[in-house]
Image (cartoon, rainbow, N blue to C red):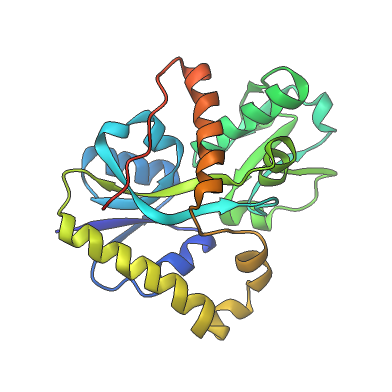
Length: 239
């Protein structure tokens, strides 16, 4: 059995548009990470911080990610006050990578990390995925992809498509082929699928993993290395 994890957010639709040869397991990013670590799924589009934390377990599908080159539109800090006045934040439990990205932005822009507190005590709320797309009514909204890009000038890689090293290689290569075909077909042959979210799919989410994306990933991993006091892994790709 070769099971593949799919984050249950709108942004994964193009990646799975023509994935037909595998059992798909859906869930929030934090749940899929747990399943992948335990070997209950063999591959998945999961938080990019997971490769940093457990590089010995995984290979990366080349050329594929969920990234942004500016505003990502679905990872946002919703605040009651300006960013410079925020001291306490609520962070959705669905997040892994976005939590560390938020700390990076605060430290680089303001020189400190906010305190993470329950929602009832927070000045601001970090939401991701479809929840962030739907949230309204806050006077201050900060897009974390945009904030990162303004600091670094680089794409931010929110999620990587990881395959366990102990997974069947032939099936992993088939998965890569189907993911690539899914992206091609979604953007070239599916006007109805694009119709409701074209601004989001074309203007917010970047599904590539180029050298420039990797430079952004290395920058993020450099930060994680210092924050978590761990060595920085070198990405290893499925071949």
